[in-house]
Length: 616
Image (cartoon, rainbow, N blue to C red):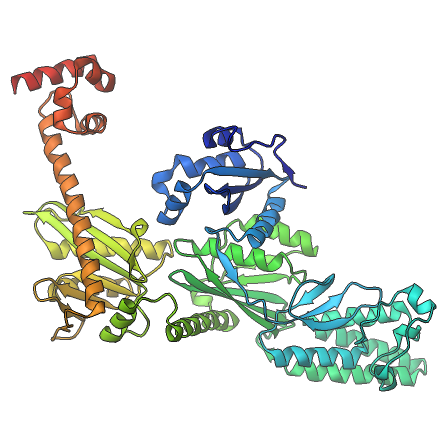
């Protein structure tokens, strides 16, 4: 049971910091709101106070996306829950309802049909595309033919009524309804006129639910025993009905693909992602057979960890799902696994194992799910490409001019800067859909090179960048641009191959003649100056150069200032940095009074600094 904070605090009453300090150290859900009061992020925590404070106390450690989000937070609202499982459920429901900008968004296609089993005294079973009835839902089904066939089997085998009558004990007793043609065609047993007991009809519905859940084998075995009992009792007509039901179920079961010889019940969830888009594929395997498959497109996943994406997919799926198997196999690790297991086991009243196979074991059904996720993503990319959605002409033209298989929606460019081998630095700039994404920019201080060796510096930077991306399962670019010619390009290609990233397209852009070099090709590509693709590359290269030079100047200036301060006895690197932060420059330190200096470094050092600059 969730409870709001006992006091409703409006934004005008307290500052954001005041509100954060009032947050209790209990489990629950937090909502971040922007200047307009719109919820931009929903999260959960075992300790609300600690979790919310982390966003504001560790700003430097945030990824770019989180940094931008934090800058937009103007208000926070929390809901306290009794435990973390309740918080997980509330978080999932709020995300589904509010669709906050900075949460992963699941774009499941609402037009896909479900099979609904109503919760009436005499339930109906029918196809629907909206979850608006008081019912249990099976699906969604991406293949309309398969859902129609499933419904036909259910109605033919279990004599489920197809009418919309409001059947209750009262309306049946008052004989308000008459049997329809289905009864005379022996497709319905006539519950509307009381020709079948509620208990018998409910038993048929329960059997139908087991079929829809894919649990057919155990049902058939039970029906065989019932058939034998009826035959032994001389009830041959009823036994014959069960015989026909068994045959129909066996035919239906045979049409389902066998994917698991051990006949276990398990769900498989796999995700693949590229840039800001992803796709999750869910396979339901019951009694070793694939009984259902579903795909869900994901957006807003850039800079999200795979474990967080999988958690979102899993919680959103099972929040409305009660057919939970004994095993759930995932394509990667998941955040808060124990909390999610507790929640699932509470829903289904049996043990649930969450399994993440090792890479070498990702074969069979999981490999098939991963392949399907990749295929759906490729199809989405092709559809967007044909429609020209969100792709500026410069990106489309560049794809064509470089002969790339997909549009270079995410381009990363490197540049190295130094002065006679001193203060070696490098920059990385990122463009997404033809526009700079400054939150993703990175600057590097070269660690292993002290000479003017651009090749070695570039090698270090590229290795550092993509090793980290691989470790954190971050987003890889569609195109890498190197500021330089054949030599720099060759260095970059070597590093990428070592990291097993040799399939990423990479080019070198030589400044003098604006030649574009490609790996393994002796002749450069020369694009006309009017080319939108070339203009985009120039913009990216120039931005990388500007960013590198800017960082180099900062490093060089700090070194020169520190060198001068190092001459003062008792001033080391840490103290010099402290002074620079306080006064901005050498000139600022010189102009500061002894009193001002002593507030930063103490009276003794302040006197030494004043004496040093008097003499010098």
